[in-house]
Image (spheres, helix red, strand yellow):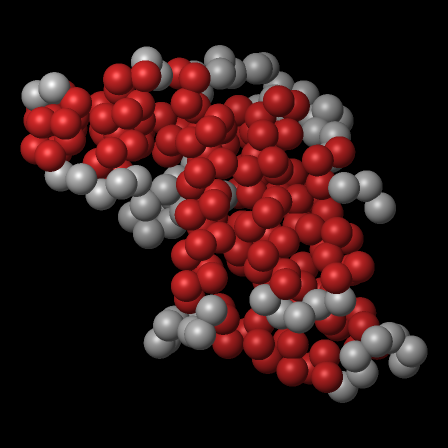
Length: 211
């Protein structure tokens, strides 16, 4: 089974959008570079979600491949109809569905590893999909999403001059206030806020969504 990075979206046709368009819009138009970038950004997060179910490690690449195949065929159906709708949330739903398919296949196979224990994995997936109290793995989840945030930042860093980037970094990543960053960098507080806004807007286009 090929790795996700080798997905080929060239079977679908469509006009190319400029690289300034959002990553998701470019992917919807079957831009091969956008698809490769989408997989590069999000595949590690899908791997993380898979590992949370204690799936056999050797089976994860196949499940991840199925997830992104489903994304290729279904991305036109993703819509942000509500304020809380995110691509990341939609991708997680697709991942749960493919994991459920995987464990169902194992349960139908009498020699599959796991036996009745796979039912526990199915229940674990179901529990994660419901709203409720934070799970024990919430910190790990945040770290995984923070890693996605950093992968996205690395993709756009070259689009900004060093001063703008430093202003953004000091307030968003290092946690300084706009005033503190302004005093440190010899800039105005308003300029710091503008720098933060510009980078975050670009990051949202890059990732499809980000909180």
